[in-house]
Length: 165
Image: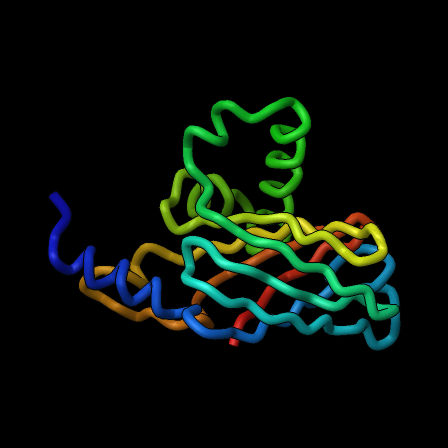
């Protein structure tokens, strides 16, 4: 049985993104990162932390949109070879953006880890993952969108750090 503080923390998390949050995608690697200055992509998110929708516009005006959902441990264990390869690539991106073994030490197995695929109007795709540190729920309740960490990889060879507001 869950403690009352866990229920409160989960309820607050569900409300964090209720309505809308702004997202900024900062290119760290790939063709966009070599531009001077590199473009910062703007997006919007709506829904609760555990599932919702995400929209971002790529350079050239391509709108990419899709949904995210919680990553379950069962999904990781039963992933197809293609999904397993993408999971491994995204894990290495977490480490590149946030530091050595960040994915293994923080994200892997967390109940506050979500991911999704955004599909563009011109055929591009963007894989996104978000993570909320567990100390931001429960009794501490330091819940705010600024504490959510995120990464993205598009089909054009770009890697992004996601910041929410």
